[in-house]
Each structure stands twice: as structure tokens, then as C-alpha cells.
Image (cartoon, rainbow, N blue to C red):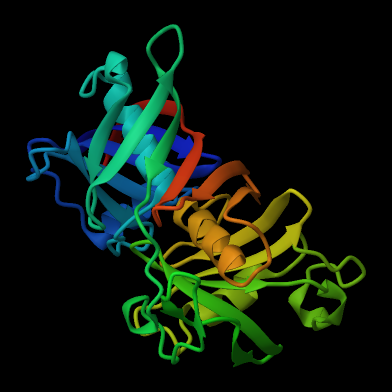
Length: 306
């Protein structure tokens, strides 16, 4: 069958969008994998079907499928692209400036900015409150710390690997995240770097260590894995996404990393998170909601046969 599509990205985290308001698109895992293949298909980190929402307050429902064909509860960059898809095509009026998106992780209020052609340029998404209780993340370790608000969480939990032991702080933003902060790259095994003479976050072999921890037995539903470095004024981060592999950016990962940095005393509650594809601004506000601000861009559109 032939399907119309639109390709969008948020900081290089890219998606194939399809209008499915009729609810008649049912893609197999093999078809999703082909669409996302960067050599034989369109190329993307996932497929997003735009469907009607059953919630009266929501403009539409974002059905997000990872590149391996598995469903994802939430995607931060994807939901900003979802907003751009709806605004640019008139499903949401540009003059409204805000709407509510429906996701598997629940409704997400979004405010947005447009250019002089009424095309959306950037959006701020209320990602809701972080989930910290280890059994709800989920992660198979006991809570070993308590936040200022009294929430129990897993802080800097040591989990072994063939290349040494790494400490992870765990949180969920509707999907599970395990965040490892690295202060001294020089102390890590040479095997973990593509260039052992230049040990840094940029040369960390994330496809090796990220894949190992993504499927570690500590994470019963697998996990997104973030490695981060806190510096003055910002947090640098790379992410190995569950069911996808390394991506240039991850919105929920940036949110979870910001929360983890604040929980562990490494930073305040508002930071620029610098990813390979660009920068997201994250605020964990006093009402326990995490606000994510960043751009969304349309790359191209066309028709594909699957």
C-alpha cells in the first residue's frame, strides 16, 4: 500500500509522521523497521501515527512506535514534532498558542511559538512530574535516598558491567531512564572509548555500554540509558534509547537527567541540556512538573510504498 508521510525532527531525533485520523493504518514491526531504515527506507528513530484522541480536552493522540516496532509511552522530541505537525496543518490554530496532546503517558499541555507564516518554531511541553519510586520506574533496586519533598528514589546505585561498575540514578518520565554522571573519564577503561587517547563523553562507545545496560536484568522493562557530565552552566548528555539505540537527542532523557542532577545535588533544578543534536532547556518547577522547551523542524514529505 502507498502511504503519505511527513518527516520531522527535534534536534536530529527524527520521526516519520502519518495522518491516521481514520485509524486504518496498522503497521507490522517489519514495516516500521523498513520505514526507519536509513539505507532502504525513509530513515528515522521512530514512526508516529496521528490519531484522534478519546479525551475531550486533547487535540489528537500521538501513537509512537520505536524503530524496532515496539510501542513507547512517551517521546519528548516526538511530542514537540507532533505539535508542529498539528499546528502547521491547521488541526490546532496557530493563534491559540497552546493545546493538550494525548499520549500513552497521559495528556501533555503544550504552549508554542510560530513564525510570520504561522508555522510552529518551538514549543514548551509540560512533561508532568517525574516518577521516582524504583518499583514504578521500574528498576529492581531498593530506594536508598529521599528527595527534599520526601520521595524515595534510587540514587547513584552501583551496577556492574564487563568494563567496571557504574552508578545510576533512576527516574521515569512516563518511560524508564537510568542516568550515570561521569566526572572523570580518564578513570574509565580504554575499551569504552573510540579514541583511548581522548577520553571524553564525545568518544564514549555508547553503542557498547548503552546496549549492555539497556537490557540489564536490573531493568525489567529495559531502560533508556543516559551518560552525562555536569559543567558550569549546562549538562552535557548522550543517550542510548530503549528499542532504538543512540539518538542525537532525547526529550524525556533530558528531563530525567535534569531531575537526577538536582536530586543528587550536582546542579539546580533548571539547566540547559546539551545533546549531540542541540540544546533543550529543562525546568523542574516548584509544583513538581518538568517543563521542556525546544525546537521542531519539518524535513520533507512524500509518499512511500510498504
